[in-house]
Length: 364
Image (cartoon, rainbow, N blue to C red):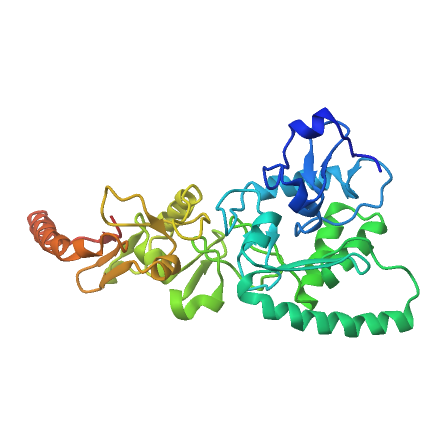
């Protein structure tokens, strides 16, 4: 097979996905002829966006080198749910789950790994969704029976269940990358297969917009507040995610905006800032809610703050929306006194200038 080299170069290089030399756990480390791409076989097999290449050349481990490069680039934006390092392109196969792993980390985290080379199935279910793997086994067995009755062709050598089999068929017809992308989106709508979990963009399988902070959609409205969106500016955000973000500006009742009563420009700026901020709990980007103690470096998504037992202070009458991490929740009462003094000072300043404050800057 083209694209595989052994020897000194292989020993020197590390897998571009897991960044290790764990050949025993992750399979053989394969290196491209150009020596510019190196990856473990298992790390590629289970990566969500890779599909078997039918070309005789320019491939590594049965995958197009260009496709592997694209997946490596995508992985640079994905933090592992276990080790919190980039390169984690293997996601839990339950659509609503956002856990994503390196192959070795999935095993270490006791995820359920499904591997069936004869059917081209390589799936991972995180430890919380191991039961979903059993349900899919029954569905695949039923589909296998139907396929055996109607089709005598051999199974695909690589796929992500039903979705990836559809992708492989599209690829074999020689369609362009754009055509394959469109076909995979259609397959996503008709199946329960894995979706893209890049925190910086919406998944093709998602039916609506995603929050620019926590990256979830309307399914989380109950716990994170209403998902507000502005199609013209291509922005969406949950109310609670905006409310506690440090740099958003909330408009007063005299100048309300439709975007959850927030200045949409400040929301866009805050989302942009969040792309450089990793959550203390989950390691994903978009964590713009920082602990109110300036010396503390902890920063969260709204729901992650709740999970980590941080304390939220919400006082609508006084316009106070703060977070204290679990290590600094005892500082709340002392800061309340300081806040009262600051509010009185702002009110006096506004009266001196002949008006009232028109905006409220949230957070610290």
